[in-house]
Amino acid sequence: MIANEVTRLEKSAKKLAQEKGWGFGKLLGHGASAAVFEVITDDQTAALKIYHPNFLKGNEGVVSRARLDIVREKLLAHACPTLVRTFDCGESEGTVYMLMEHVPGLCLTDALKLVTGDKIEGLVKQVADAAKYLEDLGICHRDIKPDNIVVSADFKKATLLDLGVVRLIDSVEGSGTDDSGQLPFVATARYSSPEYMFRLWQPGPELWRALTFYQLGAVIHDLLAGEQLFEEVVSKGAGNRYLIAHAVAATVPAVPFRSDAPSYLTVLAQRALQKDPKTRLQVVTWDDFTQNRKKQNELLLGIRKSQPSSVAAQSIDVGDLSRYIRNFINKKLTDNRIDCSHKVAFLGKSSFCVSVTWDADLPNQAKLKLQTELTFELKDGTITIHGAARSKEYTAKTAEMTILCTSAEDPSVAEQSYETFLEVSAKVFQCHLDNPGEKTQ
Image 1 (cartoon, helix red, strand yellow):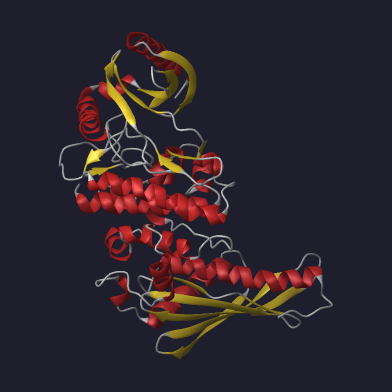
Image 2 (cartoon, rainbow, N blue to C red):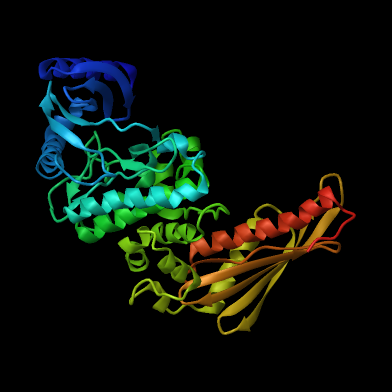
């Protein structure tokens, strides 16, 4: 939102505060569609959110008023400790306003790189509790993202904010539009699931739950990665919605493992960020976000099935999967003009090894010939990946990694295979650079 629009909203906010008898404070922040100001009521310091006047124009005005009714009827006296409280909402000065709890703390977007791994699962649980509370009321938030989450300074408390685009789960009314009334989604493109952004599913309970799970998975991704979803695309795209839409449709986010965070969070995020909503709803449940560590560890290890009809029951052709991974890595190398050869060896009915022999360039030295082997074992809808690499002088290995595998052409498996390939190869490469006189295992 440009400066003169914020100034315009500030004038409306000041006039409303004067009418209500509130003290007026500073600007707390603004986005594309609204600005938030600090106000002092009789009881406390609160946050006054004033929306752009476009929210009351045409069909968008009809939808905005419907959202106000939802908040007014169902959320003014809610009892969820991790969902922002709303004290008042309505129309004033030709636009929409909401008077909300002023939650102290840090915007999660600004704190992503600061949150320690041991605090992540607690924050995720609290955000999920708020989203589940809304669903139990028959409401979908639709805009769960770090920008709409405030965390306490010690990272022990999280609060979900912004009820501006909520909608009833069972209602067929409503519009997925932005200010122009044209785009097929409400809220934030980078945090929209593919089926929601491109209107692949009709509105209803399944769509809204699938979207919520996707957005919760994105929050886990951001906390583990220390940056927002599709950050590289967004930063390079300079507002190009087509690039963002393409990323949402086709790019599988790589969810990192962190040594200081529970490993099941990575697996949960991978499941929740599945492109296919049917698969997502099969392999993720609300219970997965309640941090039942026993259940999560069983899921991680393949001891417990996530659902009776889970993706684990699908038949995956090991031959097709091995060729897909081999071709994926081969293309990464040959596209960069790297000489390589590869072979696949089957170790059993559900396990195989992809071996790649290739030449890496050592700085100011002759090419380094590497043999990198990735071993895979498919079991109960997950695949375990182990990497090993060797040169003439050195060998290196990586720890096993288990992730969800949904098909013989699962892009998340291919991406993780390539990351493992890079990691273990880089270990050998680094040995030649740092300590060529020693051997490593």
